[in-house]
Length: 165
Image (cartoon, rainbow, N blue to C red; front, side, top):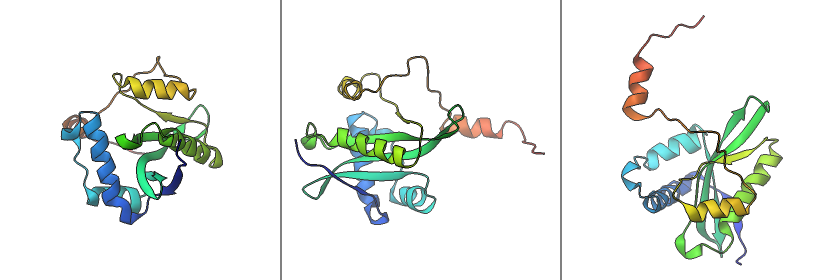
């Protein structure tokens, strides 16, 4: 197993982040859904600071990435970390980089006082599911994710005027 080093992304890594996102989308057969570009990522990750990225490195080369952000648990009364994307380049899988990225996120969560680390996985992605189970993660079978996005989000947001007191 290779030694994995980690580093946080910097603004000059925006193209690299986009490259990893596109690689992940291709793996998930969702390339047609990627509308992010470098400008959008730079704005949301580095200007607005709405997400963070860490890279896994082998021999100084970025071979994997994790994009994450904070969520909040009302029951725990504290923030958590939500892992949006985890991807390791195919040639570097099985070297411990994916496990290392998740362990690094767990450490960040603990250092920040977070109550949990969560993520979603596509139902068909058996290699990833098996990997997550091997870490001790458990699926939240009693929960279903719902999403408003795109035209549905826009239409719903416009349905009624809001009134704040």
